[in-house]
Amino acid sequence: MTTTTPPRTKQAATGVLTGLALGDALGFPTEFDDVPSILATRGPWRQMELPTPAFVTDDTQMTIALGRGLRTAMDGGPLTPERLVGPVRREFVAWYHSPDNNRAPGRTCLQACELLDGDRAWQEASRTASKGCGANMRVAPLGLVPRLGDEQRAGAAQLQAALTHGHPTALAASDLLAHAVFLLAGGAEPLGLIGRLRSYAYDNRGRYLTRWLGDLWRRTHHASPEAFIGLGWDECLTALASVQDALRDPSPETDPCERTGDGWTAEEALATALHCFLLFPDEPVTALRRAACTRGDSDSIACLTGALAGAHLGAAAWPQEWSERIEYRSDLLSLAALWDA
Image (cartoon, rainbow, N blue to C red; front, side, top):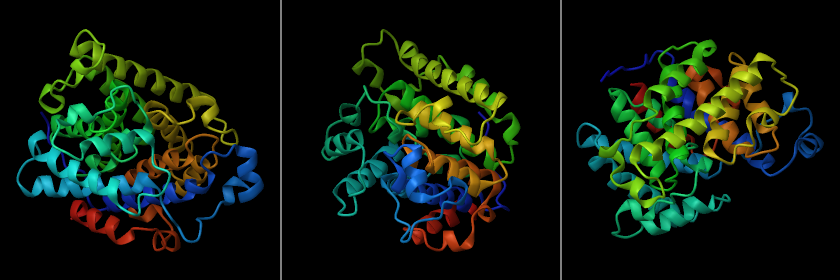
């Protein structure tokens, strides 16, 4: 097991949490619209402006909930599944009951969080047939927390996903997104990112993290834990290959969803966010605008794109006039300061 702490000079955590919230707010008004409709109401996509007020969706709300749960879990010592489950579960249930939970949250998150509100085992609440992007829209903090070993990061990323979305592809996509944020925050170059993610997926394809997931696989139709988790990695490998194919012949003016998927599922949200980020790795605002002007799950795609761009470029990626207006700014900066310190 390796334990690595990303460099903090660029304030990667501030960049990630600010970027994901900005992407969320930019994509909130365009979700469910096709590109012609977006262009008709918002103008040219390269000139899209942050809405006023800059409201976010459940993507940012649940990211904050996970971040708070992580903070509480690690106050008690090194991160373990036993320390993680309780605090994150409580934060997800609090989000479920919050009057601010009125931003068109996903059905899976609502169903699972309702079931988590009690004393049943969390595996009984998990929606094992769902691989929606709600699993990985919120996982970015796990790429930022310092002093985590590889197994801790992977296990915690998959466990937080499984609390609501228990499909193996949701678990693998969440693990990959957290790993991507970790790599970029640590200084990895965008050019080799897809190759490194594919290698990571191949290396983990047959590895079921029993300590973190318990008997989750037994609540599905799969014959073994390896068959269960292998399906998730295979679907994510296919999604990563679609990103590689799209970038061999890049077309920035074409809706990225046409090449890498609409983003409603976890693996497509990962793929299309990577697609948008890697089209413009050094133009973070342009990447966000491209992600928000898509026919699919625009807020989640842009949310993940912002997390990737913020991990790569840090806090300086984002215009001050935008970052100062984002909803939940103080909550985001409080968590970021903890991990940037």
